[in-house]
Length: 78
Image (cartoon, helix red, strand yellow):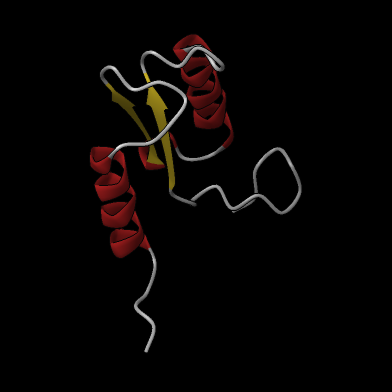
């Protein structure tokens, strides 16, 4: 089905990750973004993960979450 923007797949899965100590993009903006996404696509398909102590960077925990998300939602390639 289509969303408020032509061509939007309302069933797409979204993983949004955010460090709770990010000085460049405060976590409040991550929360606001995820709430807006939930109005545009199926909210059950929106996952917001936060990482304690993480700044504007990445962590092993985040990369493992991204891998798990990709493994779950994308078909394997040969």
